[in-house]
Length: 415
Image (cartoon, rainbow, N blue to C red; front, side, top):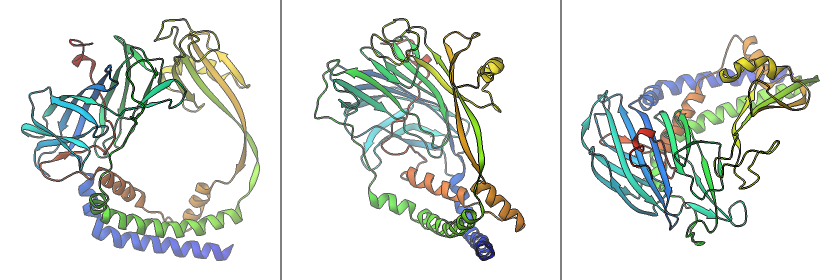
């Protein structure tokens, strides 16, 4: 055991020495990439399925400029679209001077009508008709599924994300959504690199689906991606190698020093709220059923895991009633109609965790650790983003479908 401790201490010192050397040459460049230039206040999409099964999409993006000094004002942006099988696109807002598709980026390059500086919000809106977005008999024979993952911004947060999808002829959708004028409505926000996926299911005869069409993806060329990421890949490999050796020897020490120390019971609670009536056909939900008995639509409005030490705000007033149930089963909240608590006790073997072991080892050596995780994250974001330079390029990850539309933009022309 003493041998493993000495090896672990040696690699700890080696890690710290290498991190100091790397930080001298790489600290400033990494932080220059981390500087926030822009913010997406609203970014969204409204979707209608055409008779030929293509998607008619209206994007609306409120793009806020935070810094126009470091890399100049915002003059053009790149907006990623699902794939290169689009039928048409056209601008809908006066701030768009020109639009063109960039096959290298898998995105629409939008040239703005002027340079936008810090504090200004650019209201970008355009129309897109998109094909190759569905899979027939994807999950169930006789059903066609559209899967739509809003593409994420690796370096920009999205304050408000809303997806509107026409519910006509749909038989199921996921996750649970609100309803707005015959549209499914999903609302959330995204941190940098955050992802959100939705799916909508139709019978195979709902539209003119073509069995030869499948979901396809664009890929940035290997040379372009490798060239942009090379410095970060090198740094990442060095960090992974050093930390890999360090944690390998630490893991050996942990295995030889820790063991099971009895068991404990952990109670897992999930609060599930159901819709009173089916959002698709209007039928009332049958007791004990999670899907509509008539059309198969998911009837779950929300599903939330509840921990004893942290009750979500919306269930704070029901805390006592939720936590009093400790035996396995499903319990109805008397104070909240259509809301149930699923309780599952599980037996957990108790042993010294690896993280606890590492904390003890580092404390016994008077500290330790390092910040390479942050550097690795910076590498991943920069590599995934890899936009063309010049003119301040707004950047979405390639081949993902970013979304968010404020309801006020569609109230006048809602189909």
